[in-house]
Image (cartoon, rainbow, N blue to C red):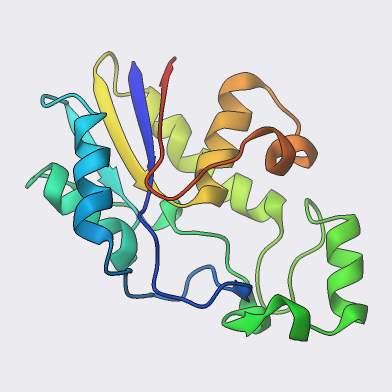
Length: 174
C-alpha cells in the first residue's frame, strides 16, 4: 500500500496559540498551498481519507469528490488549553505535560498515548484494505503517530524526528 500523508495548509490563527481540535479557518494562502499539494500527489488514488475538521476537509475535497471523513484522524485534543497562547498556560500544568507528554493528558484533553491509540485503531483497519494508493489528509499529531508506527519509532521521539509542515506531503510504502 502506498500512503500519502498530507498535512492541512496554514490555518488563520495567531502564532504561539495552542489549538488542536478547534475548527479554524484557513489562511488566505490556501489556494497557492493547495495547488502545491496537488502537484505532489498522484492524480489517481484508490481512497482519500480526511479529518472532519474544516482545515483538512477543504483540502481533501479538492483532491477527491469521494472522500471519507474519519474522526480518528482529528488532531490531539488540547482540552482546557485550546486557543490559549502557549505562554499563558499555567507553568504548573504545562511543565509536567512537557516532561511526559506521551502519558500525561492535557487537562480535559488527551495525551500522546491516547492520540496514538485512537489513530492506530483506525490505521490497523486501513491496512486490512489491501493494496492500493491512499491519501490521508490530517494534522501534525496523527501524521507523527502514523510515521512512528510505520518506522517503529517511540512516541517520545515523534516530535523531534518528524517535522511536519503545513501543506507537506510525506509518502510511505507499507
